Length: 143
Image (cartoon, rainbow, N blue to C red; front, side):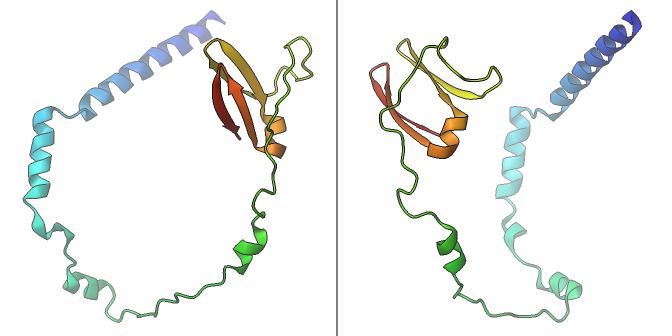
């Protein structure tokens, strides 16, 4: 059992050493950055299309017209009307002892000026927004 743990420790240290070595190789020096910038600036032909090379790849290209008219009906049908999901304007909070949340339930926490709040994401799936004031600061919590 101790041999397995020792193996994991050795492998972990080896991975850290490899990561540090790779990071040292990848990190460019300031002089290298200036050299790369000069190479890009001195190459004005880089953005031009080589027509002969393109013709060799595709000797008879197909030209299509751009269809500028498209149907928004699908998107209009699937979209909720404005203000269809009503936000919570006056949230009610309980103490942690009175809470009915499960221990593994996800909440979004917020602390401003010593005032702490927890907003359960399960509740926010249905309502999505909470208008609140935390520590004297108006906030909008969104999920």
